[in-house]
Image (cartoon, rainbow, N blue to C red):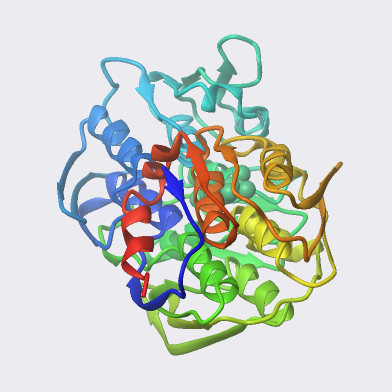
Length: 425
Ligand code: S3P
């Protein structure tokens, strides 16, 4: 896929459904009693992996172009799958499902693609084992494939070394089945979609500072869920709208949950003209339309508790920093190394290929803005967020930018390139 310098982007765009919320809606619907109807579901490969895993465990799920119906089987109604469960590229599927499988009355093996087989799973193996699950990395690498033997679980209070919603959610889901209360304390608050949605399904879950607390559930009950647009996908249009001179984009129906809105805070702090319109609550989640207007940005420091609230947007923030005056320092973000690719390495290598002044650090990167970027061949490392970040960079660079492995955007945003094209004035 090739990109050239762009004219201003103008117009209106609706962002596809939130990936995190889409996964959870199917998972919780599958273990609830009754029917769950989901609209705005993200038809990305990751969320389709979640659907197929639950179908393999006997859950009837129909998918009619974004309208999903899940015929829940109740907390204890899942069936042993006939074969290995394939989570594809999806860390959320792998880690959250592990929490549920830890309490079932059957044995399962979970695996995924080459990237998933390199991602750290000790972070869930440890707490789930403490709860009594028999869960192990089959090859002894601490990664998938995982073997999970469902067991009688007991509640724990776990202090997670990482702020990770996937870890927190795996433990909370296991906590639904455990004896006694389960608590997870994080070093900083990660996204809270599990807590919000599980409460809507009838679970007794609450949050105290950075601790989530769940009591065992007798049953969850099917819900109607409207999935808001994904702020992580909107971020590419925020960056393009801010950086391409003369642009103005209205991004409709974006989830702005405060545990996810760090990119808005950071872009506004950098001088970005971003307005939130028609703020509302949809299915328990805050949503707004976002009007973004081209702006001159200045460098900033991105660190501390804001990091988990924009962890997936740091690649596009780093790219935007190349166009900002002064230095941008990203720190406390070592988690970037264990995403779909090592995103610190992938960003710095590709930004440098385009002529940027970017440097890797232990837990982030340092970007000196103001150098014009030129086109280059970009290795996406088959990481959807790297591909989309550099597609946007290509719209500002001199000459041609070619993204290798560009199709990986199917993971979270299959229509990304056509949506981007629609905004060319
Ligand atoms: C997610 C949590 C985050 C995020 C991922 C989705 C979730 O991962 O990066 O894209 O849906 O819970 P971590 O929990 O590893 O931080």
